[in-house]
Length: 273
Image 1 (cartoon, helix red, strand yellow):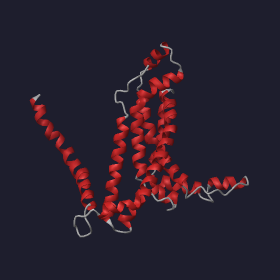
Image 2 (cartoon, rainbow, N blue to C red; image 1 turned 90 degrees about the vertical axis):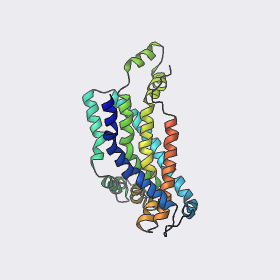
Image 3 (cartoon, rainbow, N blue to C red; image 1 turned 135 degrees about the vertical axis):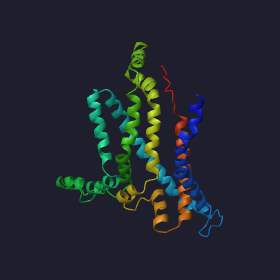
Image 4 (tube, rainbow, N blue to C red; image 1 turned 45 degrees about the vertical axis):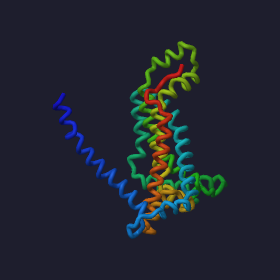
């Protein structure tokens, strides 16, 4: 036991070094640039300037929240359906869920332009029916659709992973106690699957609220999100200090949201019968 305890620091040291170099150091650099100007002098002006982007922050959070909610409404029944099929069918369905992720993120997003454009597949089909063209591209709905399409697998996988491990004997016990299908869902399945739901919400909300490529391609620059503003500060304006301040505040908001969601998670998956 002593040898194992002595060896533990040496075993874990590479991971500590990795975390320090690629996580802690970058965060410290972001904090440094957030509270300094171009000359390296300490200032709060970057933080004060964030008041000009309040509406963009709210828009980003709103879009991400809608995309996360819709993803949850789609993923939960789909994950439940997958667990009720044969193991071979589950493997096939899982492959279909993962298949779009084998393609590059940029290509997946860009492909929706050919579908939603005024001369795209949908409007071409509607045109043959004497309808349209409808304005599908460069709209908030298109941006939210892009978020859902790209991040839906991250909602399905953790929910399916938890649901597939549920003990059927608990459902049988609930039935013996007089629970109907709806009662089983609300008082057994939902509480037990809550860790997967919370994990899925986190994995969809975090990238959605900070995305910029989806809003640029499917929003046409008309639906500016906070990720677009940060990207613009680094790539166009070369205002690294303001970009770092925006990134720091966004990171804090994300951590707060994750902490709030984890507050409602029950790791033990308690059952209420």
